[in-house]
Length: 289
Image (cartoon, rainbow, N blue to C red):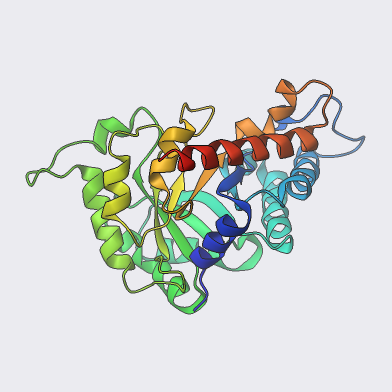
């Protein structure tokens, strides 16, 4: 089966590993961008579509963080649904950053909501800390439709060390336990390019264990947050890739707000330039390995 991870792999191979994060807050829009009579959600969607059009030639994929849209109520959720559809209509993979972590029937409903219907995405993010039964309701969508999941493993925030770095009795960290169980579960869902439909969120801000993590999970595709605004450097990010592939590197504010660092350049053109700069930065770091 040609899976969503296969789509991501092919997107990276064709256009590079940049994942454009459409975590769009109304305050990110240029001054006077909103049109008369336009709702905040409509303005955000128009901004998003301009960014998609401008960057789709140099973006491996897109990620849409649902919280920014939920905060605007029904107006925002309409913009969320239309943004997901716009990315898919452009022929690019889209990751819905929803971080769900419930079990049983609730998880079944989350799976139905985000793998079908108006909120359909190619991949979603999941929080596994209630156990493997918080992941199992999503697996039928991986089996039957090739849908993908990125499971929070070792994240990019400073608080990752509060729990994820705790040492177990066997010497592993908690994040190792999560990654090992996810990798084992994902062995039954391999795509055409050898990557499982169960990927991992591996933050790019802690590079100490990068090479070990990449070797430990050879069949796992990574969603790598933390580049740019959170402090992740290209030299660190490159360690998580495998032959320039095997992961996508998210940047949200760095791309959405690139126009503020490029005076006189339109916001969509500035976003394109930032994607190109980021892509070349990571490629150069890969060349140095």
